[in-house]
Image (cartoon, rainbow, N blue to C red; front, top):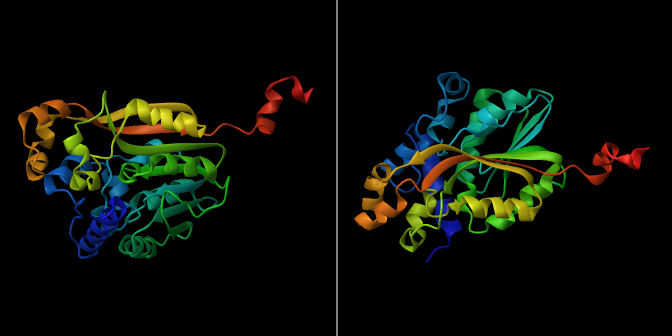
Length: 281
């Protein structure tokens, strides 16, 4: 059986090719899954500011650029940047003195993102090939990390979170959109479905575990803010398509999944924080 990473790479490569051909990308699960999770995330002003192909390739579950409070001059990194929509929007917000990096492991998505960058004419953008478990940037080099429904696609979320902590500057922050489970763990039949994993559902962390992993990595000021809560009727069609149409399964997942905005901050270095105490007197 192919690994999760292989399946994700294949499905998202196909999504990029769909977008380049002028069609709306799908998340590898079903049309109903994508339309439920990825619809209406960007307003008309944001959509008008970027190439149409970037919008067609959007497979996120939120809009981290709208909530990340980016400042001019900051360095931003988008984990799993896809067609580049959040990178291009971030680059506009940090301005010419800032920089926006996009990281993706899929050649087709990188080619689409770089083409979108050329069309947008933005020079403070750089797309990198790599995996979110091994970020190809130095320690303490990024002010803000964003991500849009990508952390759930990793089978090693502890490694992703540790890498995010490593590359952030002291005081740097994480501001990601992701799918999160409310309450106890989801049914094992859902976890076993590779298609739903690719669609960002089966890999969802329970809210408490997400907080625990961030805390263990060293983050502080952790906050999980729901942005959409999904009901069983929202999921019925794509669960049917995945062969999980049992009413008891639908009842178990009713209201249990949400799109959420997850914030956390890397603590300031001791030397930088020391002047708040008597050590500087």
